[in-house]
Figure (cartoon, rainbow, N blue to C red):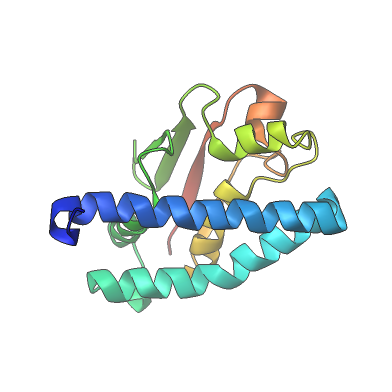
Length: 173
């Protein structure tokens, strides 16, 4: 049997994220089976919105970030990078970057989104409301950051547009 030291920080992180995402998927599935897709979407978004300030608070505590000082783009980039460092697993095949001031761009590789694949298997992709992007937007909301996203993000972009990519524009005083 391996020790925690042999597994290492990265291996342990990946294990925890996979378990968390599997729990999230099973929770969504149980809501879907019990209440239908409309209520599953509503409950999923309500849970994400309730979790976001707690999650970001823990990220700030972990990395020693004062979230009351997120008042410019550089400070926001630090907290986004920190949040993804502890919540994005290797199996999540998306990338993000900051191509210019006040802009975050994201892109999933091909059709390799775990949520997209799961919702297709469940045959509800045409009515699924993306919780992945919603989670990031709730992080921003919990920080009080003003931002703008393209219209049409209510569903799944891979399903409606054939790919999931876009940008978030930020507005600072």
